[in-house]
Structures are given as structure tokens and as C-alpha cells.
Length: 182
Image (cartoon, rainbow, N blue to C red; front, side, top):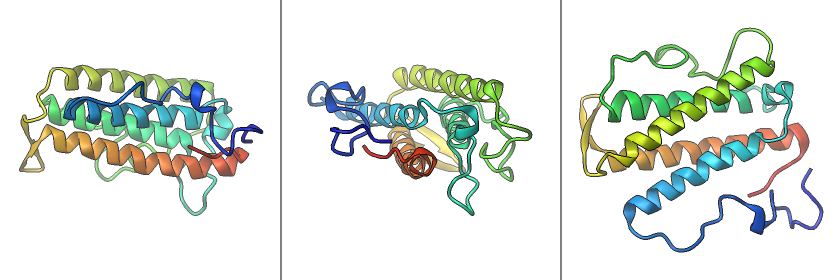
């Protein structure tokens, strides 16, 4: 539940790791800042839950769960940063091909090992993405389904992808334990 005295906020503003320390300077810093903000938001929305809660599909008829969102975002990070920006399209997509459900489902029960594997995979893909982005010019053009696309456009897409799914995570989390907010 939301803590009393927080005016419905997830965390007191002074404790929120997503709060900027000042104005951003330039396009890269701004884009990276928003991307990191949403990566952290996903982690916060999943904090302090059991494996069973993380695997709960609490907004029927959707199969979205918090654990599914973590797995899906690992796939998204891998696809855009390893396969597209780093130029490795031959790498198989995480959790199957285009006809699969993109990581939202898994066989068997949700347990500590599955949760640890999902977080480890997501964190490894995020770290790799940070390295790739750190050495890649935003003006660089890459191939996206036969279309030349600037890396900056892909970063904006990543921000949009996280923002959309963090909205889903907010709803799922609120259904699980009533906790909602920023």
C-alpha cells in the first residue's frame, strides 16, 4: 500500500532515485536520462514482491505480469541494441521469434530461479545497451526492416516502449497490492 504521508507518491521525492540532479545539457544527456528514468521505474514497480506476485496476471484478459514485462524488456533491449544498433541481426531473439509472445509467458511455475534469471538477463542486456549507446553516435544510421533509421529515433522508441510498459506495470502492481504512484 502507499505509505501514509506521501501524498500518493511511490517514494518520498528525496528518496526517489529517478529524480534529476539538475537540468540536462544536450540531446544525448536528455535522451539517456529519460531512458534510465524508465529503466529504474520498471525496477521500482517490481520491488518487494514475491515470485508469485511478480508472475501474477492481474488485469484479465491480458497475460501481462510484472515478470513478463521484465522478460519482454530484456528482449527489447537485446533486439534493438545487440541485433540492430550493434549490427548482429543473426542473433536469435530472446524468447523465440516474431510469432512468439515476446517473453510474456513461460512454462511452469514462477519461482525464485525464474525471477533471478529474468532480472539477470534484463540487467545484462541493459548494461550491454549502455555500452553500445555510449560508443554510438546518435546520427548513425542503421537498418530497421529495410529502412535507414537514425540511432536517436531508436532511443526515442526505447523511451516510448518503457513508458508504455511502465504504465502497464503501474496498473498490474496496483492490482497486486494497491501500491500506485509516480
